[in-house]
Length: 141
Image (tube, rainbow, N blue to C red; front, side, top):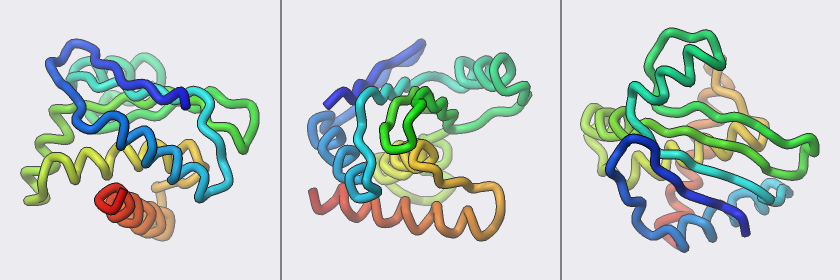
């Protein structure tokens, strides 16, 4: 299964890569999707901010940006950029473990590729319930 993890301009090593790949595959399959090419790029705030400005014309910091590269709704192909600095700060702010927050953000990107949104209160509520399910599944995998 082609799930890849990369880093750009940060010193970070993702734990349990094989388990995460299996977990992501299970999440996609639960939604009747297949992952064919999914890249997670862990980076700094500045790196992600530059992407946000250049590609989305948003001059803000964020924890994640997801690019859908698929032409087929049942196929997952995408690039997901995650700011490790934001994830660490969010974990501290939410008083949660870094690994749990990382699972939340990693699954969040996949859920965007699966078609879930988070702009309205209703969409955000559904996204949070999907993330909670994903975290529980990861812990049980």
